[in-house]
Image 1: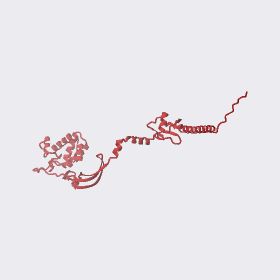
Image 2 (image 1 turned 90 degrees about the horizontal axis):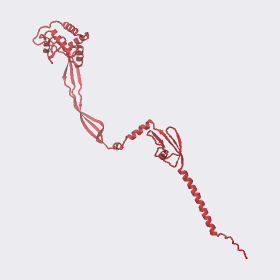
Image 3 (image 1 turned 90 degrees about the vertical axis):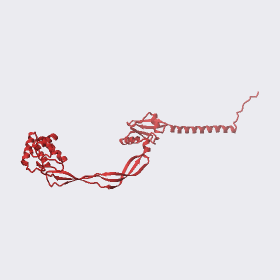
Length: 321
């Protein structure tokens, strides 16, 4: 019997080419996938250093590039007084470092100012500014001129010889308005339409005249009158300074003349009572008796001012007492 032996089949040329082709395609696919995998791995994962405002440093791994995303995934929240470099809206810098610091005082102020402006404020700042020329009538205050024509006399009084009147001027202003509100005013010109009239005050010597129809000479002397007045001041508990003030006061009022009569006001006597008949409360001889006049004058001062020194102070301020 003949033994049958199978002969090996020799691969054809086409089969060998197909195997090689599959091998090469598989090899290329593996290389490409490996490269892509390496690139994807390098793009997704990176090491980032985060430096907190306290100085503490931490290293984290992340696939994010935006600073805010990296902070959020590590549960880091910026306080109102903190800022990050780069800022939360930016991407990481080349050194892959995020540094958190505290605001300086200047940065706090700038941030507060920035936050203080609302959208309405910003829009308002761009509102059109309107300029107008307006004419305004204004008063010009008058001046007061004082002329001393008393020639050094101790007995003086003020007399207005010319009343003062304010003047008038027209002033042109350039006025700027924004939202119907005045924001700036600049004077352009002015024109005087009425000159002011100065008030003139003359300081005159008090005119002393004798009582009409009375030609009798006064009893006693000026020194007698002042001595009597001084004694009555001491009797009322006033000081020597009050006596000095009383002498100066009545020197200015009447010159210590019993018959002194002011032709302008009608005041009469040593204390210049107005009207003189008021002194009748101290005696019916008020026209000729210096004691009656002095008594009334001291009572008037005591009741109105409390003392001659205070009466003198009032006279110096007002020109009368």
